[in-house]
Length: 384
Image (tube, rainbow, N blue to C red; front, side, top):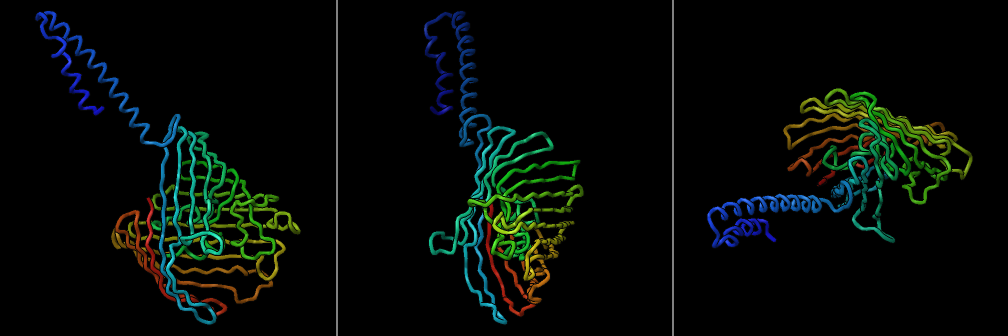
């Protein structure tokens, strides 16, 4: 029943019920009925609040709050190949992602991320559907949390936070993509917390890479799909955010056997460090990452890269940036000697809304093997 109609009906009850009574009786019964009506209305308000609370979430039990979100991005690439590199002129809905989260109570929550890449997935299709996150997080104390399941590794700048409206450039930077390798997720357990205000830590024990008969670190991601787990990965990070606008972090990842028991045991260690600085309209990002893989030949035993990216916000809607990237997946001994890649990007981001972005950038490459792709990229992205 409509709440207003019910209130009106209740307030008219005394008039109907008290017809023909004496003045004293009338006053006493009016007072009693008013009291009864107040009780009814208080209960009605409580019931309405409970109903509204239940309708605000799709779950049950204490907490019961389910949330949904997501992001997506469409890219247009117009690149000319030189020195044997191919031309690239294509339009691609690169990512469509949905988040679903649920709070079981104030201390236990669930988070998930499902991604469709390149618009269509299936046999003989270029796209794929991936589960990038699905974990339960527990609050142990005010300064400590634990989680278990499938989650993004605590390394780099964009590996955990990569919605299109939070970084410059149509495409994600090639250093984090090829060296870290973003986006990188594993299955296992992790502990996170704050040592003191502004200094936090993460430590994770997870599944690891499988690089048997593969070369680039990126090719060793198992994506927790019946992943071989003979040798786990241990990853740790320390991060400083105690000064407004500043983030400093260092991450270390190690596994005793990146072949997962399929060959001679060979260890792998990654070190990554980065800095983020924002002061008014000016921003700066810099990152360095390197892998050392025991036993690899043909240069793959060392894979390393770095980039630096200054940016400037002209106003809240427009920002410009430049980025210099340098990386090499065959930087170790025995490599070909012409595997180093260099790329410079300059461009513009336009935010018609803080969660919606339009990007235009131009890239030039100066690769050691002279196989370069130069041209421009355009993208549109969103998050909600």
